[in-house]
Amino acid sequence: MQHMAQLSPGREQSQGAAVEVRGLGHIYAGRDGAVPALADIDLTVPAGRFVVIVGPSGCGKTSLLMMLAGLRTQTSGTILVDGRPIATPDPSRVGVVFQEASLYPWLTAVENVEFPLVLKNAPRDERRARAEAMLNLVGLSGFGGRYPHELSGGMKQRVSIARGLVQDPPVLLMDEPFAALDEQTRMTMGHELLRIWSQTSKTVVFITHSLTEAVYLADEVIVMSARPGRILDRVPIDLPRPRTYQMMATDVFGALRERVWHQIRDVP
Image 1 (cartoon, rainbow, N blue to C red):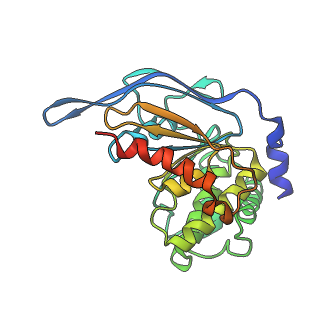
Image 2: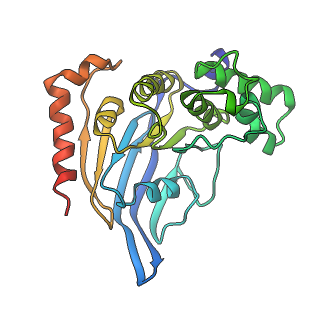
């Protein structure tokens, strides 16, 4: 925990924009010719904010996330992460957590977390200390020696989050990371993610199909249209933090969720 505090400033110190997208478009080749996936995306995410993206299936949410991660190249427009263009993966600037944990089964939890540091040839003692600090942050202290098959689904995702944080990137991208979990575990993981976010000052861009999850987690919900994906609305979530499960039963929470649902429901 202290190690992480040395890596990141407090959330109140976050300034500027962590992610800037201007005029973003993407066209891919389909069976019947060019298919526009995204069009005219303009998006600014201030540093330290938790932004959730929702929209109908096929609207380009994951494509947008992959471009922010440098894993896919846009057809047009610009992307700046931490003030600089990104065109290839850079785990020191952007951590990524996918829907599936994607852990190496032959590595222990701590070895999975420290693997990005192995690729950077970091000294063994340093990478082990950082990996253990991240496992402690995500609530897995004492589980570093376990292999993936010995961990539950929620624990595997905690390991994935720890791996995404181990290089201390200012931005963490998450593509439906809890979708495969049961509802109880999913709610617990969402609450835990907010705890981790509050302690690390990260800028989070999170994709989900769950509108309840979106409103519960976010500072702002971005609503996207059907393909080609465009931004229909930016919904500020003015619920106090820390969030509590009881908020989900309030009229304010219901009204925010309904605002998002109406726009997705009415998309042709």
